[in-house]
Image 1: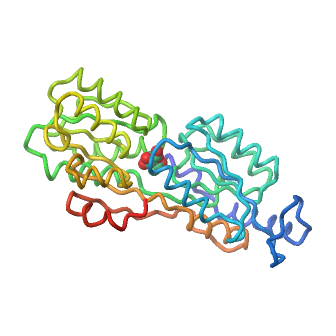
Image 2: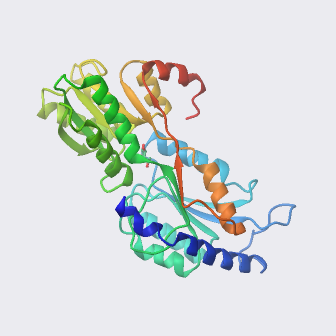
Length: 332
Ligand code: GYE
């Protein structure tokens, strides 16, 4: 898509420039204390990671994956911060890491736009940036070395294709619980779903943000139920908002999964349990276990090896039967 293309051009050039700097630095004594790995004498790679927040089960699993992988044992020194879903908190965390002179910056940008200044600052400091989970839209050339995450448009399409297959011809009315306004997954999942149901008789009658939280999903769904008495389907951009919607639907005396069908994205354990219980009808997966890919990209970047500028994480989808089968081994 065009809005991602600017940042993608000339990434190889950044890798080369950033790596030259890192290679040059690595023969110098470490600037900061604690830069030596125990015993081996190898320098730890210092990583500043700015996380979006703790808004969902997906995010909890994603944070755990990063904290379990970017460890001293694996050769890293991780500085981690939680931005509580606020862009200004993320920007100041990134600025702190730049001031500390970390080797690599990584972050999951809460929204797509508004990063140009801080990305320029990272570039000026020769600190390579890795994006995890969410994309940015930026005018800065060579803004990041790699973007690791799912294809959110495809996730929305998979949800919409299933809805079209199951429900086209019923004249169903759909309400949509959107993720955080301005975030890549909210923009892309909305677009993917809408394009997949185009040409069917499914109709989106209302669409609002629940900010990817359970509480947000519940409140927005309560409003939808008051405003509309003809809702057949909920499309929630994540499991947590779908789980909040279940509470609102039950409180209104209706049966989730039957009177009102529910389609969500993520496939975290609580969502999968609700699917197995028949309260959710379909879930498209979004894999949160990005830590291992992030570790590899950082190591390659610092070692001067080429890295993929886009690493697309593969996602599956589950109906009730598949959820029952998958639940016992589900990691998150
Ligand atoms: O789907 C949602 C979380 O960016 C893919 O953020 C992520 C989304 C995920 O809050 O649960």
